Length: 129
Image (cartoon, rainbow, N blue to C red; front, side, top):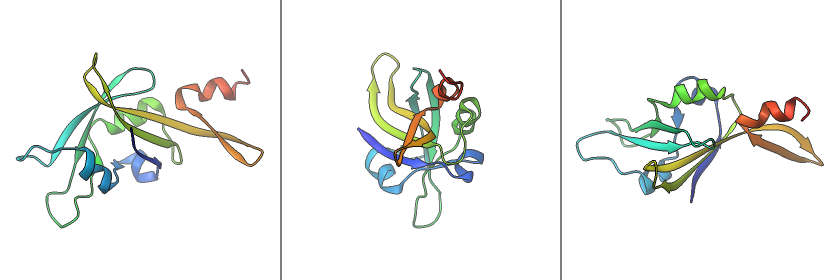
C-alpha cells in the first residue's frame, strides 16, 4: 500500500526527509517513552536500510522526518532535488522490513508526459541503451 510520494527538496537531500503528518499518524507507531522509531525499509534492489522516523518533542505539530540513515541513502543513491520518492507499507517476511522505498528520476518528456525511471537505471537510459 502506497503511503506517500513526494518530489525531493533541497532540505530532503541535504538534511532530512519530511514525512507527511497524516501518513505518520496513520502508519507509524512510536513507543511511549520515545520520540522516534527505527524503520526497516527495502529498496528496489532488495537492500535493507534503517531510517529513523522522529518527531519534535515540543509544540503542537509533530513534524515527522526521516533523519538517521536517510542521508546515507541519499549519498549512496546519488539522489537529487526533484527526484521522486514513493514510500510503501509492505512487509518482507525474509528481511523483516515493513516498508519499501522507490526513488525515480525524470529523464525526459515524451508527447507531453514525463518519463520517470528508478535512479539505479538512469545511467542505462542516459547511455543510449
